[in-house]
Length: 171
Image (cartoon, rainbow, N blue to C red; front, top):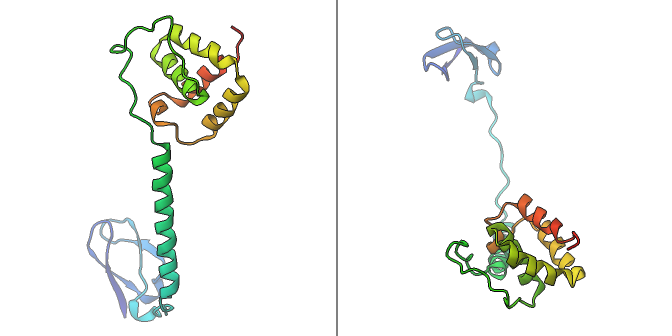
């Protein structure tokens, strides 16, 4: 008895001898290579194991725990939206009050460098250079993280790394 199937390329009915089942052949209509299927009565059905309800519930619990942790981590890392571009920001004044937190200081430095506020960036850099040990700790974390803080996400990573290297140059 012949195997009948439709060509996957042209859709025409193709007949083949049973000995060619499970092999490739050419469609007599379009001459494309087609797979000759094995007749379904020759295929032994797979016997599936019953569903382990306890394992399924445990997998669902673990998936929910992962989602909860991801939401928690995302909420911890969330920062205020980025400030508008420098065109709307007033020019820096010489007596700019510098943030005391090193992470904020470095973030402000990187934003100023990206926006071209070089005089303000240099003031921040001189403040950062006073405690390069703490700065290097944050820089290390920043370069290792796959996801950048929200305020720095719009700056290409290669540019950020270049700005951070400039901090180690002497004034």
